[in-house]
Image (cartoon, rainbow, N blue to C red; front, side):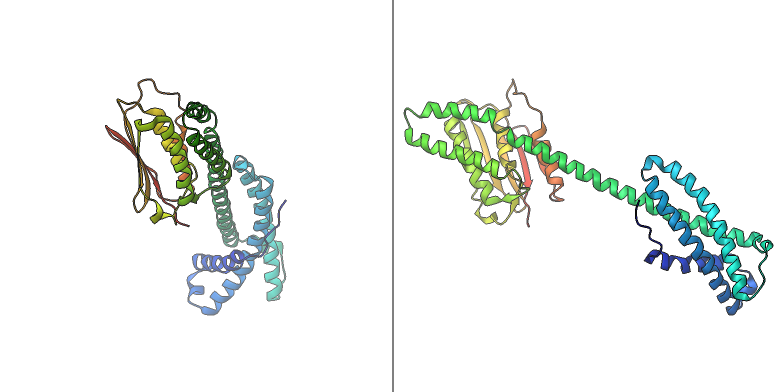
Length: 340
């Protein structure tokens, strides 16, 4: 069911503060002008407030676990209010009895019929109820936000795993066709081609569980991937690439650059008449993937999740945003560099 918190810092601090507030709110002019009377009123109100606070805290804890969901709010508030009123009256009667005992005065049930004291009692109860119900709703809201973010992250990770696995079928088919074509005339290049292909798949598999990787590792992977593309497209694909050594201490989500390059190849015409220029560089804050925009008339089927998922992945890694620019003759994506 849960562990009741009868004494905690909020309770220890809240009781005297609330008691003082009630004294100042409900005290008469004579008491306010007499320090002794005000002190007595404060001590008595502390006892009243303490009994009401602690008993209601136990009630709130019980119903918080019994009706824990937001859907059960109306049931929780209803039963909590009824129980609180009954317990509050019992606490009020007990406090009245204790006050008479402390003062050495005889106790009578008629002593409990004091409208002013009852008003103060229910005022205290209402304030404590509002406080705890507000805290409860805030905790539920905070937990809901955390769970939502966790679910979004898990969904994005799952989608990213799917995207990474998509490198296998279509890419492998085209790559094997390229390999078959170069084996007869260029056996040495074919061996190099197979080694690069092996490295590409090994990298994708080894980085499957990683959220970020070193730029150095990602660029080595990209160079192997670009070698395969150049072998396939030859001079029809023109690659312009920076030396990334100055930012080897930075990080990126794995395979993001490969997905962007793959998108450029998939959606644009590459031919001797329309050569595709692919630019891979960086500035102080971003890795930049840019290509000439010469979109295919008959586009390959695409889910559109590649770039969208990369953007989602970045929201869980850094406040910096992925920048996407589409101009008349070029398409640019800037991936924020990550420092650890």
